[in-house]
Amino acid sequence: MPVIVLAYPYSGVERLEQLLAGHAGLACTSGTGLLPLCAEAVGTWQRVDGRGGSPSLLAASSVRALVGKMTTIILARSGGSRWCEISFGQPAAAQAFLQLYPEARLLCWHRDGRDVIRAGVQANPWGLADRGLAPFVAAYPGSSAAAMAAYWADRTEALLRFEEARPGNCLRVRYEEVTSRPGAAMTEISAFLGLDAKHVAAADATATAARPATTAAVTELELPAALMPAALNGRVNDLQARLGYARLELVSPARAAAR
Image 1 (tube, rainbow, N blue to C red):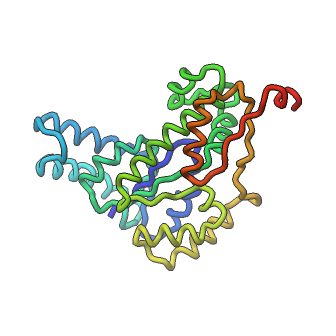
Image 2 (image 1 turned 90 degrees about the horizontal axis):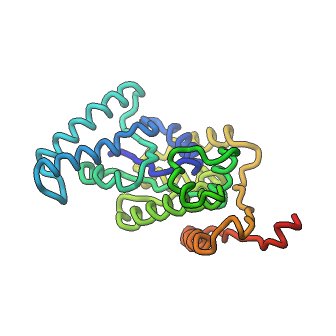
């Protein structure tokens, strides 16, 4: 039963990857491109077959054989028995994978939008040069913060749509919970994935040793109103509320100048 983590850059998913790698039997990989390859292969077969919807038996067996050969190499190299992929692509790519592997388990990774905005801006102090951010920079050329907010909102909305449509396959996991209480978080994750509970304590100890002295999420972020269009701020705060996060507060021009 494969394990897929649906995440995105600047979300801090490396913390979860570290914990999952501590479980014996899991062969963890990141960004291999197997999910989008699977989606493209299924789409190609559908065009060849002249049919939509679920892939034909021939198409499914063909694509499963392709993915199976690659995952066999991954498992042989790591000594694991189950493949676990950290995927940074759009969640839609996982739909084709679920058609082929309906038993797969997916973890949908979320992080407070305020932290993601800060992480993206701090990682790109001279401007958002990351290619994946280009459409958002084009939409908000005057504000890196707004571009990151739009990026976070797009990725978060896509994740929420995916997980809410497939509750049996998906588990919502938040960065803040994994960071602040990794043992409890991994107990829930392990139960969902069907992993051996005896490895939870070991994973907790590993995460505690590797964790910085200060583990609280950096959530205090106030932005000048001029940097964040009101409509975008409303969209962000709607998503913040759905995920149980606090609002992104905008600072008035006078208050921003006083600072």
